[in-house]
Image 1 (spheres, rainbow, N blue to C red):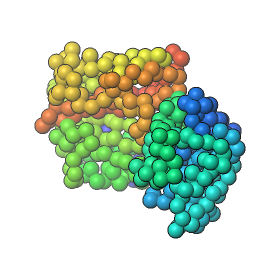
Image 2: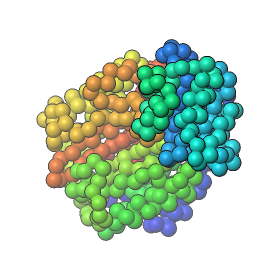
Image 3: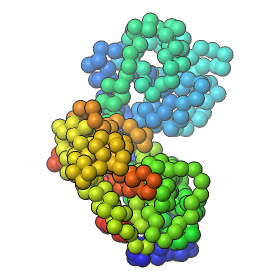
Image 4: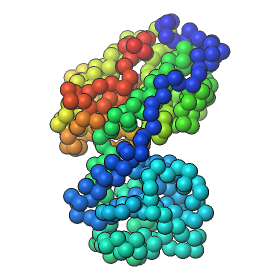
Length: 400
């Protein structure tokens, strides 16, 4: 048995849990204002007069409001000049004031009123005619707006939203680093308590408990724990599995710190790996390293995906998405959303730039037998890439 696997009792693991000491600073008021001004610069470049940001991760990005979207419109209208306008139900005003991080002109609406008419009124008052709509907004919002604004005047705000959010600031990187450090520590403890007979449900409960104890926003944001043949399904299969000697364990989990995500996967073996398991694990590590080595400013996102696939295809896997091989993209962006731009996938010619963050997870699936996924995130630097977490060492040494 590896010294990193199965060496802790549950009580010993819990004794190591305490609130994380290295706390990253929150996003400052000055940075929130810089985000609004950046959006305005991109609006001018796109030739639009206003930007409507719906409740969700982009509203949190611009205003600090951590609310998800519901059937009631809660949105931020950024115009060329003046304070941004916050559209919100009247009865939510107190809750809104408790979380807002920027000065706004509040325009509140009662339950029987049409908030989209209010948005159109504000646009007219501010001298605007064209509106860029948050790409994360539901179609019902577009429908509501176009009852009052010519549909030809409502455009897609993807270039503006992504233009602001794609490259992370030092403060954002620090929050993501804390989240990643915490999740990697939870992974180490989870491997430590593994033993023959443990259930996937027990591991999931412990991982959530550990994230909460360390100070994550809301425990685990998600957790996939799979054993043996179930590891061949990238996002798992339902039901509880119980671990047996010689089986692979795949754990994929993460948390948030002030809204910023971690997302780390480790695959390792309980006991001794057989030749097939070790061979595929070693190929997975080589593909992950090849993708990392391909990263530098100016390189197209799809070229990182291609670098991982070349390793696998040279070993006789694939090609493309065929199995045994890599059934999905090599990676996804991460930040306030666990999956966001940029995506490391064929066809995405977006050039990498300093501050972009992405997962590196070129999973290998051997149908009917097992799968191996190693997932760590990196951010782009002037010289290439920098890991948030050190990658796994070997199939029986999951942590550096």
